[in-house]
Length: 441
Image 1: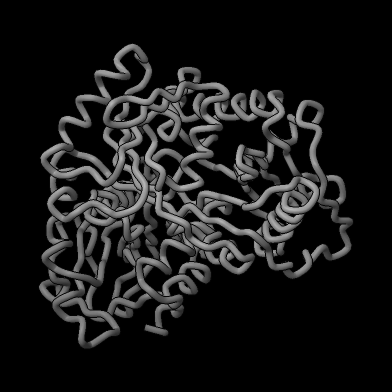
Image 2: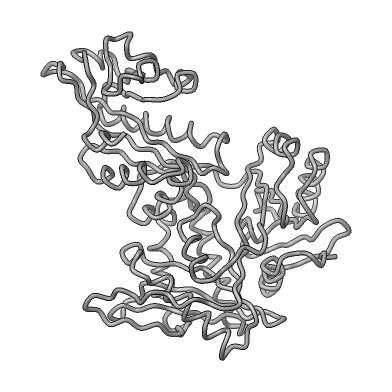
């Protein structure tokens, strides 16, 4: 039976899933299944009464596999709960089992603060409910434009997204969801679903803004307009949404009046593998957020913004299941004393991983994926400034052994070099020059 202290957001999760899925109360937990979308992690899981203990983790995994064995396409294991994080012993046990952690705040508001107006320029702006059937092509197109992983991801991920949009359609046809959009000159640039649930609760679904129209007030205006309508004409007593605790929109939600009600937490085993790919414009907001969280400052964010579009720069993201987990930047370097026939070289850094995903292989995947791309592009060497104990595992060695140094005199032991091709450092000597943007450090 569902404990009475489960969060409002989790209760609406169950209510929404029941429209096109199955919610089954077991003796020790709740099984939530989405047979029509078996690749949807947050639609196929066991909802636990609290954070699992270390000595019970394996039994929860076994129960999941036993309960979902009839769903042959469910290749993951997901355990969910509300509230407290894993105890250290349980966290260590989860990692030993190969599980990764995920979490996000469930947020609630009973009134919203009016946001600043959209900056339309010379464009006409309209916010209105959408005709889901007639305008579905625009809804689908915007959803694809907001998720670069759909075009570059695996066939399984693309199938998951198609099935997710069909789920939206079913809920809309059932009268549960109203879809809203923001138009600039009749072009859909922002959208979200709004679900009317029992107990006069309402929640947002799939809030997104076209990458070219972000940071212009589109999302704030959309959330405020939809929420004011739901609290007024819709009769809702509270507005709910699930946020990415390390994502770029968290501050926006708080400024509008949302507060954290609880933290939804999960352990994932299996599922999609991590993919390292080139960063695209639609990634920029999420990258800024994770880099700022990883470094607890904005200088690295400003550096990446300044460098990412410069010639010879390689900007990479590590992605799993549509979420960006990490980012790495490789930038060209030069040497004052290098000969005319020397091979080009790059420097790694900054590299950042979401705090919740650190020490789980993301940084290593970014480094190895980046070095492979650098070799393919004909780079002769890669430099890095960092912990020698960590970077030596990838083959980096002290640069001073090759009579090379950088502009930061206190970094002698930390400045390292990795030869990427035979003779890759021929002609390199003396000072290695980073791009001028690095002078701020």
